[in-house]
Length: 563
Ligand code: HEM
Image (cartoon, rainbow, N blue to C red; front, side, top):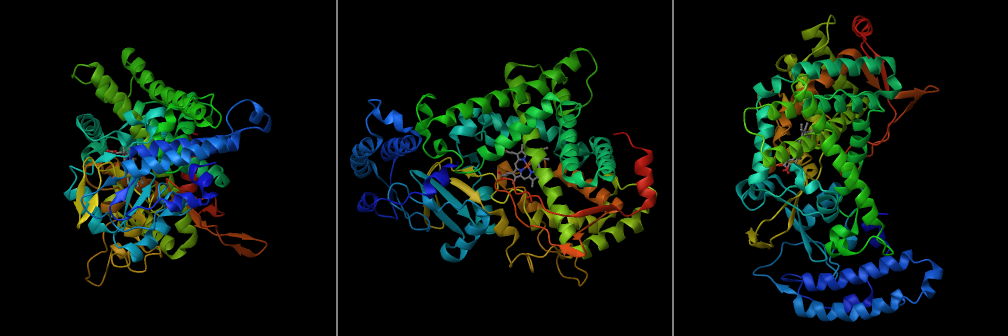
């Protein structure tokens, strides 16, 4: 059960409503948080206590709770902080818990988008003593994350994922500073320019062909083959590691770690993220099962960090390493200090963590789009047939000669953004935006989905329409989603040039070799389910048909079958 689900069932007791505060400038501080943490934990424990435990001499949890209520009221009065200006508008807050009950659990980005009409381009949420700013416009996102990048380049501190499991040492969750700059420089070296990315073209071409061969052989498992191909490409690129099938130890660990990451990065999954003081509760304490979960996740995370990295080191030592992010840096002339060793290791983790599920999500959205919008598919196939013919598969090198296919990739990134709420940034210091006060530590959550579906930027935004990027009437193309879907400012996605090529190659390959369509069962067309996962937004399983469309390409794929 997630934290938000747990509290979703609770109604604000009357005593909370009795505690009044000035909603514009006054919110609870740490003192109130600690007291409310205790209350919440006792209530959480109460739900987990077995009936026989209630006679065990431990104070009745509800009695304890009532004592804590008094403490909360006193602490709240004593410690509530006054701010030098009004906080941005937002949904009405309850005393102490703030907006904790209003956090949406499904399609969060759509609920947050609807707040734009009510509150304007920025909306403020308070969750206990924590603040979150929901940014719903391109201008506000640029003003905050680009123009004031010196303040808004930190990350939110997540007690469970960051501190207890250990992701705070990896780039995506690390605070901004010298260390993150070093990490980003390491990545820039291998994927920060088109020339750097071109060294991975042979790898991408090879893994794409292998993916198409697998799809040809087992079309019903298309999504599995997409996932396997993306995973194999990134493992090779990160460590020069060739996975030995599904039972490969690293592949299994990585897949668990990334599933865990999806949960860890979803706001509200663990109540310790909202009430960090809970991390001090011992793991044997009733209701503290999250501690055991955290320990299991940490052990897997450490395996993930070490297995691939040690593999590359061994290969370098015995002279058999192939070129990869880790081998390039480990074998460079710079001395391998402890600091540099740590940097390379934790940047490699971020590379895999940032690149695998995101690319899979984009390709899954592409398949869904092709199922729903056959005209766009036909147009793209026509371009592939005209420019490439049927004697070979498209490759990375064909990107510039297939503008419509390239526009399909842009539309995939816009139509269903992979990271609809970006990775939240955090304020390093107190600041103001348009007269509103933004306290230090506020999480800045940019709603990329709203921006990419803003009717002022994109005509008919719900429709999959690659033509919007290739106008033929002399008008300007609509905004390139690359400037939004990869985030903003100092934390912008360092893998975007790599994605550009790898997404294009997989998309062009599928278009060249297959037709994607709706399934027909007993003469009836089955409409695919259109639902997305939270966190990294990937379509939930849906029905589609994928069949070879080009005999010549099918036989080329079969003949060169190297599964
Ligand atoms: C469709 C594919 C992808 C999308 C849509 C995407 C999107 C994003 C977004 C929105 C962010 C947050 C930016 C911000 O905080 O403002 C991000 C960060 C990041 N991405 Fe990507 N990404 C993709 C693929 C990749 C790939 C292939 C890699 C690596 C090879 C990668 C590595 C990273 C890393 C390391 C970060 C953290 C950067 C930091 O915290 O400084 N991503 N990505």
